[in-house]
Image 1 (cartoon, rainbow, N blue to C red):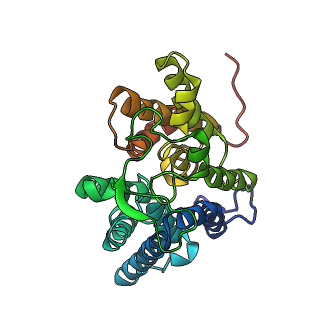
Image 2: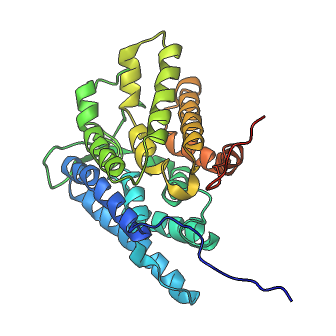
Length: 316
């Protein structure tokens, strides 16, 4: 009779947990959320609170209804709620982020097995469904009212992308966030501060954000005859930086290897360039570019496999 001995594998261990990673992501998003409240008033804060609450409660009810361990303590539902709220205008009805969070958690995350099992980013998928279902509400943006806690004017305004070339906004306005847009996408300074924190904490690496923004910029430079000003304007417009730093880097829906991450980021940048420049529509297509690459991510994993621990490359 054969004897089998079960022993521990030589895994490398540290103190990083899902909870600590998600908490770091929440901390990184706080500057952009604060900027959104500063520019768009109390409605932005209410939408953020409703979105997070709906996401957490949806996951809690699902776990209870299916007699599973309650997983809301890992903070992944909080991250989903925050990301969804950052991707909607401050002018949407209060019921919309609630519906979006329920869709993100139940339809995209939990039904596929919970955190790590979803094949696309839950917040982005919910955002896409909201945009397709209620296009007018999702494309009506408030004019920022800096420091006006009572809220910005709710008259629909064009975003820099949907406006004419350079849309009347300066690069400084785009960088600081004093432009129409969704709650979390306008202040690029806040987003970059949060992204730098995530890189410093080693929650994300530079590969996907740099490849995403770099490939988009190179394509736009070539297409515009090396118009640096127009390319910079496009880089600072819409949800590109928010998507590149906080959504394309999602662990479950992006490749694990450095080569895979670079390829994934290149694909996101190329798709967004096609949507913005070639298709030339006023809508923001960043979320759709990332979702399409989420679907392709398993294929990228297959063509960019990681080397097994201790593996020695054989000589040809």
